[in-house]
Every structure is written in structure tokens, then in C-alpha cells.
Length: 373
Image 1: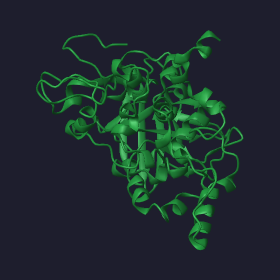
Image 2: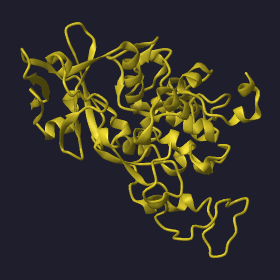
Image 3: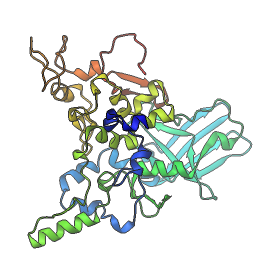
């Protein structure tokens, strides 16, 4: 209670469950009704440019029917072996079969869902006769161009072929997975697998848009601008703390990560958590230090460090002898004014992902220092 009443709580981060419980739209929350959604095509009728680019990026393809996976088609036969068990993904036409041999009996199931477009990797779900979802024990990793254990699912000595092959995914986890990787998939706390939109499309972040589309069409016909309360969510207008938590609904808010107990370099996968752990985050009231200040969620991720220099220099002075001020509170870097993030946001190897991730805890990183928690 003391924390809730303190002035600092006004700018505090929240766990995603707390945000979802608040009034108004928030990513991953239950949808009210299918009729509330307009669909990406309706959004594209006015926002064609944004919609076209977004369809091609990893977020727009965060989940695919396995039959639509370009990775599976490009790698029609993939193998992985550990101990007595041999794993195989075999694609014929559009269908991919997942098989594990080496136990008392071979096991084989068709894959249904592929999560991730493959920038780092792609993981898979399938069903058995009981109708439950099961996660494949192996995933594709782009850095390896091959299969390996799904992150966090490695087993040194599985007791059965079933344990070697899969992990059952419970209902709550299914909702979280599809809530972040698809659009309009969760209704009344249940997955609507038949009608969801694969991937993160417009309404996953801007909220159900049917009323907004209807109002805009009416305004276009009548010539009278839309009035009254906004009928669509514009996350660009959120406060800095809410803005970062908004992205953190799927990428990991500060409290999501703390509650989950994720530590070490694995936490680098949760960029919002690491960002607000930075010293320069301060009270969390500067819009220059949010996810969307650096990244346009509608476009392909920029991977060149120089692409972000202008953001760094919007806070840091960059002229010789210049002193920090109200507009530029950050001191000048004594080394360079170029490729700032390559030094101050170093890449770290996340072993379970077999890939380097940019650590978003902005800092003066010194060679040989331990990973800061």
C-alpha cells in the first residue's frame, strides 16, 4: 500500500497481468467479440503502405500454419540426434512430419504451427488425438541452419520416447503463446484457433478496429470528421512507462521478468526489461528512451549500429566542449559520436538461442566485466 501511494508509483512499470486487468485495450487481453475486429485488409484500405511492409517482417509472421513455413519447405529433411534418440522433420509438399526414433517404438505426428519466421529460429506445435497442444522438443535455429533443442527444453537423459519427443502445453500457456503470436485468437479465455489471424497484424497492437473502420467510412461519405472518443488505440500517445510496458506485454516487462525469475544472459531476450534497468531510464518520463523511439514496429528491424546514432544524440551532446543541458542531459562520449550502440549496448550470446542478442541495458560496458543483473 505504501508503494501504491508513493509519488514514484505513478511512473512505475507494471506486470502485464496488471495492465490487462485495467480498463481499455492492452495486448494479449481477451477479445470481446469476433465482430469487433475488422481484419487487416480493412486496415490496409487506408494504411496500405504500413500494412504492406508489416506483412513482410518477423512480427507480422510471428506464427504460421506449418504448411506455410518457408523454413520447412527450404529444409525438407532435417535431423538431430542425442543419445539413442533421433529426431527428424520431413517435409513433403506442404506437410511436415515430426518423427522420433530410438526408444521402444517410433513416434510420428504432423506439425500444425510454426512460431517465429526464423530470424533467430522457429519452434513447432502439434496435436495428438486428445486435442491438446504439444511442443516439439527440437527447433530450427538460423545460426546453425539446423535443428537443436527448443530453448529451455534440453534433456540429457529422457526416460521415454514420449518425453524425448515433446512437452505438453497447458491451456494457460497456449493462451500466452497464441496471444502474442497471433491476432484475435483469444476469446473468453479460450483459443479460437479456427478464426484467428496468424501473426501480429494491425489489431493485435491497435485493438479491435471494426468501429473505427465504420466511423472512418462514414466520415469519408459524409465529409464530417470522426468525432468523440477515439475508436482505435494509438500506442504512440502512451506515456513512456506505459509505452515500454505495451511492447513488454510480449517482449517482457520489468516485472514480468522479475516474477518469472529469469536471470543472466537469458534476460537479454526481454528488451523492455533490460531497457528500464538502464541508469539513463531515470524516472521513466522521457519519450526519447522508449522502444518505438528506436524501432518502427511496422518496418524491418535495422541491424546497423549507425542507424540508431541519431536517437542517442537526441539526448547526448556531441560537440567538443558542449555541456549537458535540459534538452540534452547526456554527456558527450569521449570516444566517438558514431556507432554508439556497438559499445553501449553490447551483443551477448544467449546459449539456448545459439545467437547473439543486443543487450538493451544501456551502459558503459567494460571488457571482462560480469553480465550486470
